Image (tube, rainbow, N blue to C red; front, top):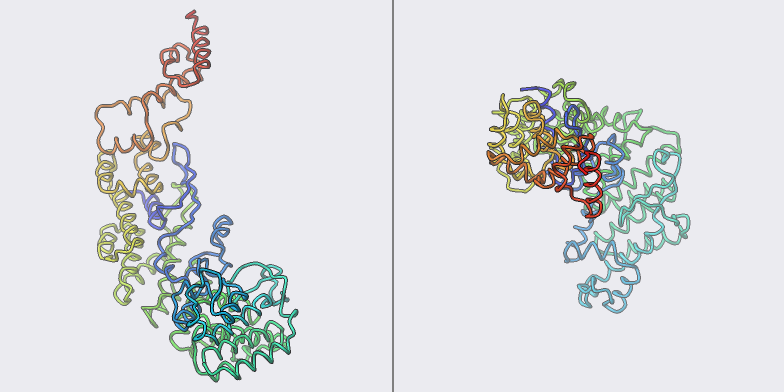
Length: 585
């Protein structure tokens, strides 16, 4: 079995059977097909938690890929800032969709109508009846005031933001990636600050007090009043001693203000072993559900781009959770080999989903590395593969995420061409979720194609009986099968990836096609293939006639003129020309 074919073919097990477009190579199959991958199914396990979604995307992906899953757009989800929304839903006693609409989508006028009249005309807010509005009056007051502030909650781009576009705004309400015309400089700053402080003091509920405190910190930060922002956090946020999601929103703003203050003072406390900015952003990354990616970007750009390095120097003082976050981010930035950092996370917390993400990225990186090269030039020459396999086989015993790590071990053993071991681990994956069941089908079919030393139509017939559904859906698996068949059955290899009408204008190809299509000895594989490639006897003879005509073999073309499917008048002219040239009339 060709080793180079093995490493190529396994990549299919990382690709979704849906949303794949392929540009197939010619019938010689000397080059691998080029892919636009829209959905990578392998890491979908960790993608179920959208807080981890962004880390599965490589910043060096193709432009087409980035345009679809732009890694600088946080939370490519229909329901952004879901951690905050979950807490609103619980606080207000409503479901998540209702909370999302009330907090993120409703207008300030609608909220004000609820406060004044106990209802509004918007049917999506019917749940907010008079009883609800009376009971949750203070919360609605906060939401109304926050909606007043929201259009202004953007800060102007500064020198520290040159890495991004001219304006880059992180929104509390919707995380939309678009510039606003208003900024905090359009507000009466002192009046707003005083109003927020009065509302904070008048409010008895700690959760609402915390939200007013967050608004204070953010406003001062965006106004570039960095000392005030840090002071407001210490005065109005930290003393409440509660840490729901909104606390980490405030902590992120405080860390940003502290970073700005250090730059203003041309001071870098991290040089003295005290990286508070980095520690705050790391804590946001560890604890927040909504702000992980923004915290990651902040760690990349704060403290003159050395925040992660400074944290590493303080790593001995970190608790396990923060240490796992740090090693994850270091492994993420060392994308080609995150395995050393993955081992450190394994030793600290084998149940950390961050370990899952790093392994998913590693396996996906192998897939990307081997796409786009000629088959003959490929070799399994990844010095980290053994290390990855060792980690996966260890984690499948240590971690509570048994199915995920058994699946990883199956993939990596298949990369190593240890197919019996790969099948053993695959059989241990018991999860019934669609993503896992699809993977079992993909990897099982892949192994069935690659494992046999000899591969012919009989082997293909056995495989089609077991894996017809997945072969119908996944063109890459058909490409792998085609590669195995191309020397002995070049026509069949072609038909695995093309329809019959793509054979071109070669009379030899069409003669072979008709001979294969009209054979009386078709097995199940042949019947499936002829149906897939849309073989039709009349069409085939029509193409054959045109091919002969194209080759100036007029006598042969004349034999099949009745099959040529064109307009009647054109057909008559064609037949006349064939007859005239061949001196039949």
